[in-house]
Each structure stands twice: as C-alpha cells, then as structure tokens.
Amino acid sequence: MRLTWEEVEAGVSCRGCGLPILDGRGSRPWRKDMTEAELAEHEAADAGYRSRHADCRSHRSSVSGSRTTHCGYCCPPHPMSPAKANELGSLLRSILSRKPDARELNTWRLTLTCDHVVQRTQHRDHQTWTTRVVECQECSRHRGVICADLLPYSEGPGHDERPSPEQSELQRAAAERELKKLRSQSAKLQQRIEELERLVR
Image (cartoon, rainbow, N blue to C red):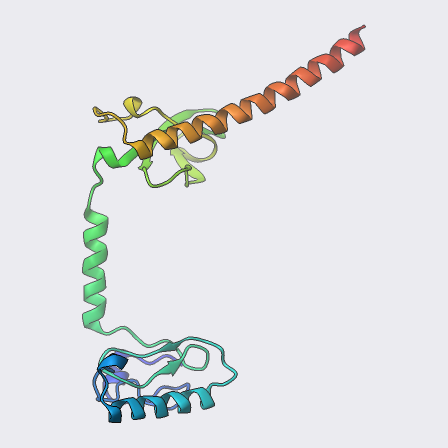
C-alpha cells in the first residue's frame, strides 16, 4: 500500500483515497492569513474530507508543499523525502555523538542477579534506574538488576562540585525509598523472630 518517494514525485495517487500526495499547490497558509477565497476553498475541502471520512475517527496528515489532507485510518503513511531523511539523520547523529558532561550524570550502585555489584552512570533527569539488564564485568555476561541505589554526588566519577538542588532531591527520594524498604524488612524480621521465640518456649 505504501508509495516510494519516487512514486510520489511521479504523481502516483494515494492508494488509500486516490487523491494526490503532492498536489503542487504549495503549503496551506495559516487561517488568520487566508484571503476570503482561500478560506472558502479551505472550508469546502474540510467539509469534503469530513464527509469522506466520517467514521474513520483518526488523524489527518499532509506533506510539505501540498494542501491535500489524508486520513490516518484509510491512507498508508507518506514516505519521507530524501531531504527530510538527511535532515533527520544529521540531527540524530549530532545528538548521539554528544557526550554528556559529568555534571549531568548520576552514579548508581547496581546489585545484579549474580550478586555482583557494579556502578553505572545515567542522566540526572531519570529519577529511577531505567535499565533492567546490564553487563557484569566479573561474569562477562549480561545480568538482571535487582537493586539500584543512587550514590551520593561526591562518590561518582568526575564529580568535584556540590550537587544541584535537583540532584539533592533525587538523593533524598532514593534514601527515603531505601529507608522504607529496610523498615518493612525489619518489621517482617521482628515478626518472624517473635514467632520463633514462641515456638522455642
């Protein structure tokens, strides 16, 4: 059902609705900038679209440089132009090649299913550890993460400044979670101790 970009440029119509993807009419102006004739044409096109897709209940889409809208339910997705693909690829490469500053990272102590403990860094925007499996260097295998503790700022690699308020809040929240967990474990242990003492008597 999908068209290639070459087919779109050659004028092949959408295989869902039969309308052109590139209609050669240019991008639609903002409604506030439309003339009376453009506004009347826009409203007529909108009414026609609504009548054709009354039961579809999906989004509309169009490509840059074209005013024809297509239905997200009836029409297959439009192909990406080579220029847009190159633009997106360049943007992604620039993001992936950027190395975060040490001040943007938090250090976590991870306890793995093999009982080994490793340290990993993660961007400070994350309030919890987000990866379920990491590589254990001692086992030379990927292991599951069973416990993740946020380290104090000073224990992380390259951290030679005071933590930001956001980092302090993350550390406080992590400490509260660990304290709650330990208190729960302590209460269960105390209950079990009392049960065993009653049995011993």
